[in-house]
Amino acid sequence: MKKILAFTMCLMTAFSFFGCRGRTNTGTNGKTYKIPRDGVCVVGRDIEQEDITEFYFTISTSTCPAFYQRYRFYTENGKYYMFHETRKGEEWPLTEKYTTKIGTVKLTDAQWNEFYEFLKDGRVTARSENLEDGASGPWMYLYWPGDCGDYQEFSFAQSGMKLSFEDFCESLCE
Figure 1: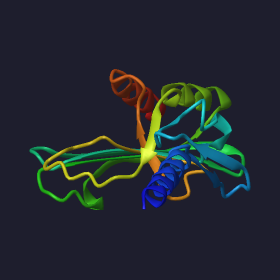
Figure 2: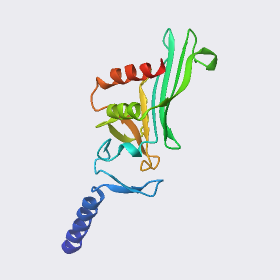
Figure 3: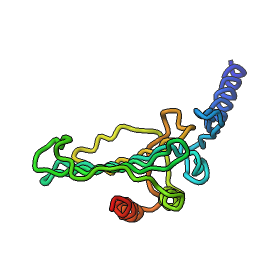
């Protein structure tokens, strides 16, 4: 009995050791991506600049005045773009009729590189339910071939980056 118990304990230890070593995802591009053991992918280490296919930054608040802002950075046919939409109004929800600013900007390589510098060293984790009542965001999601529908929730490396990023986005909309 003691031998069986000892053997079972050894097996459980071995399985838990191997289960904590991280995993790999085969991306939609056929490349293999390693998901670190802690489940945190870092932009610039685990996710390279050329792997980024889309990035969403959304703020939405129902308080008076109601406000909605979305920035979407994406690649299409080897070109870089940013879509932006702003809605403002006195009622909630803010439907399309409250759109005050909308457009798509074709980005230069330099602008895409500047965009990437904001994301660099940021963390991407598995998506989770955001149940914070009344939270306005920002909700940020980064899409890349290795995310496999799981690893997309983004956070900046430093808290002050959010404001600088918003200023950068606003400058592109002018």
